[in-house]
Length: 206
Length: 198
Image (cartoon, rainbow over all chains, first blue to last red):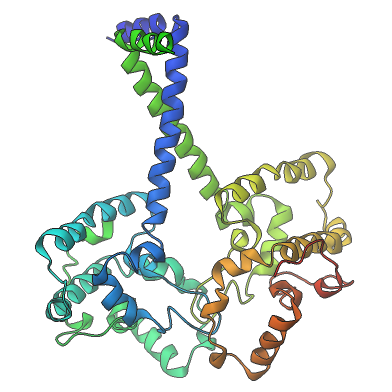
């Protein structure tokens, strides 16, 4: 089998035209990957996420405005994708596939297209995000907030004490830092949510 | 023109052509994927801060400054301040790194502490001029002026930031020597940059 493959490749390579076709394919590959990468970056921008559909623009984006992750002393921000989309390539691609669900809801089922529907679905949606973040140990938070590089002496005494306690109790960021960018729904918060830690949770991979 | 299309058609009809095209496509994707991954790797702290001893020294200076360790643990590593974030400027910056190799392997221009200190002012000045010319573009990639809340800044900072808006100066004019040792000699405000963008 390998001999036959090699023979075939050699026969094709001996044709001058094959080289041209190979280069055309090569160029197409580069263009395809660039477009793919650029669309990944574009669909992670604030311009795309925060304003493209009224579900996001009228609720989540407005709630986020003027919170600490939008506006602060230094002007260093976290936008939608920083907290809600994985940062490494493969989990990112999978998350983008999952976003097809958003298109489905927006165009077909109209799941959260009014304020009332949105607020009714809010506990479910928040719980989903909290579960996800608990499952992967607040991976997206930690992409920016490097725990090893936090200086406790620059934090308030309350924060210092709580962070020390949280570390001891194996809690994760979202257990306390929830409802910091969006309205908190009624119902149990992240600390009351049980996350199965007996195996590697799905959200730790994706 | 129709001859050209007939040519393409005759190529396409040959068995194996599609295979070669797909092979080329895969090679293109792998090649460009490697370029992209290398760009990401060459911007990582692991690569920049420890790959050569010349930079190792600079990395030590950066350690424990506000951009390394702070209240929230949100950091700026080497590339955040010193490598452009847009595609093309990034690629251009990477190409000009041949100089670093030249300096490291051939001229050994800053391979000892003494040589480094002797050149420190010149090196610092180069960075300051660069940042003045592009209106501290790399600072502003993270620090969005419009999203700074003056009410959370100290009274002094508030007043000075207010002043800078009218005086046409840029971030690095005041915020210099914040991550590396400041050399003797005139600072950024005394340097005339070729272009000071608004």
